Length: 277
Length: 361
Image 1: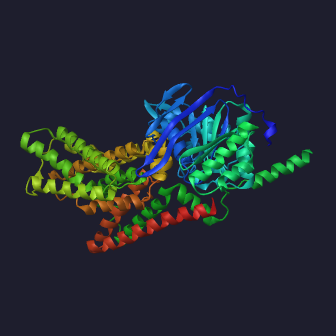
Image 2: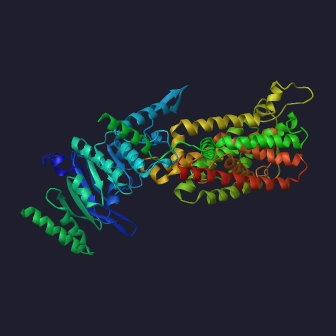
Image 3: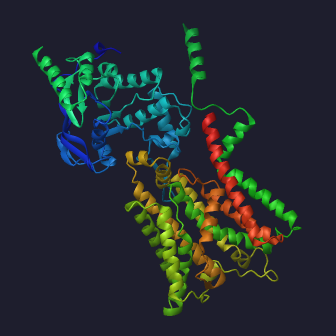
């Protein structure tokens, strides 16, 4: 799982998704100030930054869970409005939230198809086609190499890694154009984390789906991502390709001080060095 | 090489973490209890029947006495099942007894004052119940008032309306066949009617209607998208919203179902006695119905519950109420048993889940 495994993304690849000048405040708390991000076809973009930097808010706007105060979202060249998570899903944007959004009291296969259930008609009644959902879920999880005791198990009874895998599997089942993963590796053991990372790498290799990844471990950022956006106090302070910057530089920015100015200055310094070289 | 692969496979099989197969008797019991919530309460119900049958020298299983218990079961069960769906979403409705009194009162008034047929009045009462549910739901989700408080408010409000309309006088309702005999009036005469006749069947109509509603609810809960979303809403409301389930709407619909069921229960009760009594549904009725739902295996915390269990729970409550009185106990004493029963059922429900989660079976 090395950087060399996967060829760098062609710079001419079209932009598939843009969030332009997004601002959002919750009452007196400003979460995002004029944030813009771009995502190209098949690109893996890392969203990094400290706790409370606004990463989760940004992706919850993208997933339709929150609505921005100002700014626009452009998907495949067209401006879109997401009033609810359903709208975002309809536009091919799938999100795996930090809390995974799995329902503990439902079975794995019901979770897989929650919100897009299969039905069959019996005597004119629209009933759940449980057998179809069970079979599809089982086949799909097997294809991805995800090991769970049974698709009939209640999610409450699964381990952390199994839940994570089910949540990721659910989000890629509908072949989305954009996949958003909010800290997919948090709370995972080494082996389970490697499995999820491998899943992301194989998606990246195919370059069919664009991925936004929120991660804290910079080592992993360089392992699986094409580009980094550094978010601090609700603003993007650094936008760099992983091939142009190094882990040390990233850490230097983080450690450069507590103030916004200090971090912005350090980020600008790194950016300048990049353009020079 | 192939041997190596074999051992790896074997290793992978044993490594499957998460859920293990139950080994000891205790673990098997836990699985059965938690998967088939109805099973444990059904056992309790059978034991109670046996106890009262012997305790009353064979009086309990007589047609006459069982008829009383089953009619009570029907009335209580219809309100209990109304609570089940709502409790699964994590909400509760304490105003059902208010609706239980109001709906038939409106039906009776319309009939007495304007000569409206009972069937039409019943539809009006039913719609009124659904409307009360909608108001409860909207206040709860829009104004973010906990449903416990919302429905205490509407309970007093409705109760106040019922007693103020007609100076808290019961209204004697006209008897219009076949409406009354279909919806609760018992035509059974132990002296002349055979057990297998229409008249005998009418003795059980409250129970039969309830059984019909319970069956419908069980299907809605287990076999429809709405049921799935109801469970999701109660189990993990944030997650359900994140996945795009309209949790507010799910809750309001379930409040409306609860209101409709409570109204239906009230109308059936009035048909049974040909009288609309403003005091028919005291707050105690709501609490007994909630007790029935909880005893039947519905969690007060949301996320899980069973419609069929609530009917068995209603039978247990009705059996305790009537059985103890029949054996000569004071009516008040039966409440002691009922209280203990609720506590025991609640402890059992919570502990079964906890034990199962801890052992991962």
